[in-house]
Image 1 (cartoon, helix red, strand yellow):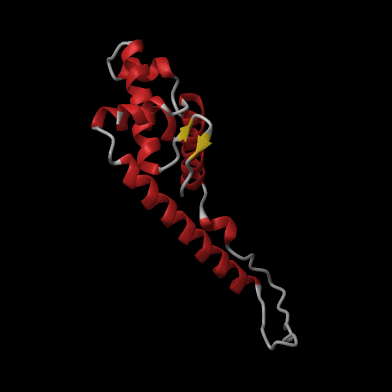
Image 2 (cartoon, rainbow, N blue to C red):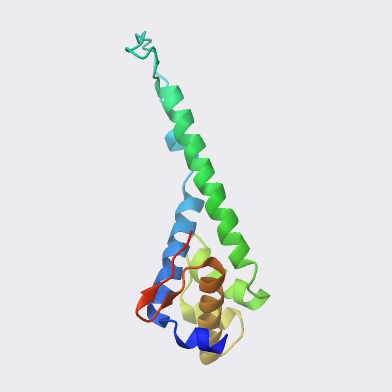
Length: 148
């Protein structure tokens, strides 16, 4: 395990994990309301095209919502499997620093957790490595390993 960690590019791995955190926050803030069709008082009859397929805003919205829901659930299951491998303190640190709607500054987090600044950064780096490896987004020196 230690040889594996020596070959990991710490900065690039941190960027990869932070990208996952941004995706998480995007999913958490995105609601399906904007995917719903608009309802107007105008009714139109859409004639079938040559394939006899009828397309409507309601059908298109339903397909888009189903696609979004599938991607959302797949991402959340993937993320939660990795996140739950962290210990309680690491999960708290990551949640406060990255996953809340308004993430806190590092100094606010280590004060709230009642740990020193040095301990905070050591815990954060350890949590990043554990999360990156469990999610498969770790970046090695001179090569990338990315799965999702």
